[in-house]
Length: 253
Ligand code: NDP
Image (cartoon, rainbow, N blue to C red; front, top):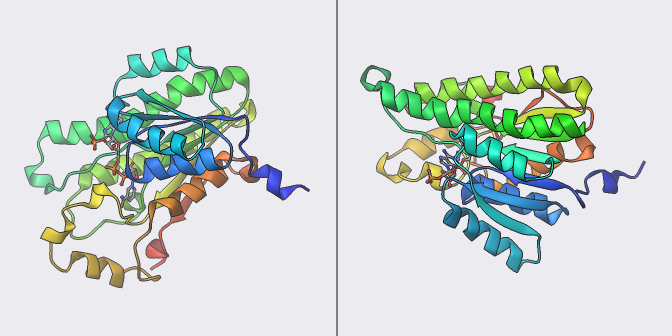
């Protein structure tokens, strides 16, 4: 068995949503560094281009496109304009902190639209082309917040959306299992990205989280990227419908 070649993505076409910063940018780098041609997308093309430019400067084959994951028409148009993807990573996500009793319909709807409906529409649009080609690996970015409630942050919309992503992943995996398309998810712990900015305004929050984490630390974006790279590659050929906890042990206790 040639284990090294199983991880190689040379000749594969990959697309990452929300790739302009944070975990998505690291995922784009991980895929590109192992040989894939990567399309970085973000709601703002300029932001996707920042990542793409950085990776091109490192010698990787990367380009940028605007893609709002709530826009099903734009998703289907981009899917039609591209060859079938080999790898799709649904990473774009948003969060706000609002107690349930104060949450407006608009705030609930927005988070569900990006985090859950956006993942469905992206999987549906690009997944159709993958099914036609009879091959592909989809990786959705869930969260440990799908399994535990992230105290003391009031994020019921976010937690529900990520639980939906995990079960959507399993549902698509079962539907597409015999047609060459694998669908898996990664459930990260707290990862140091702009999504967590503003924590300094909540004294003691980070130290409380670290006390609750067996490994006693947060994660870095590249530590999620390497799990995604594994799921994108043939090294994970038996995995579909899996949700991999990348959480430093947080959900074990
Ligand atoms: P960031 O906020 O750093 O990056 C997310 C990117 O997605 C931003 O560029 C954002 O743009 C973009 N985006 C927002 N809305 C849309 C949209 N409608 N269409 C396309 N792109 C959009 O987040 P992270 O890198 O931290 O998170 C990435 C994923 O990982 C998310 O799904 C998140 O829920 C998940 N995750 C993160 C954790 C963490 O601790 N950081 C923990 C567990 C899961 P803009 O900034 O303009 O909104």
